[in-house]
Length: 125
Image (cartoon, rainbow, N blue to C red):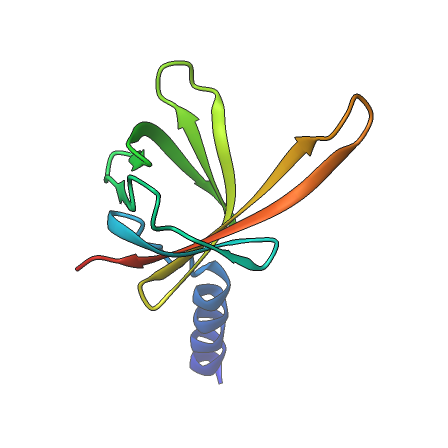
C-alpha cells in the first residue's frame, strides 16, 4: 500500500509539473493570413519566412528582434531599444504555428477599431 501511495504521488507530481517544451527554433514558412477571419493575400509580402534562433533572436519580416515566451503569448522586442514591437497569442500543433495579433486602429480622436490578424506558419524541415 505504501508503494502504491508513492507511485501515485509521483505520477500526480509529474503530471502537474509537466511543462511541455515548445520548439520555436528553426524556420517557419507563412502559409496563410486572416484579418477578422477573412483571408488576406500573402503573395505581395517580401519575407514569407520567420526564423527563430536558439538564443531568443527572431528574424520576423526581415527585421531582427528578440523574443520571449510567457504562458500562451510570445513577445517580440526591438533589439536596439528593448521595446515591445508585437504581442501574439500562439498555438503550435504538428509543426504548424498560429500567431494571433490584436491591432487597435485609431478612427478619430475618440474611437478606435480592433482588428484581429491571424497568421499560420508551417515549420520548414
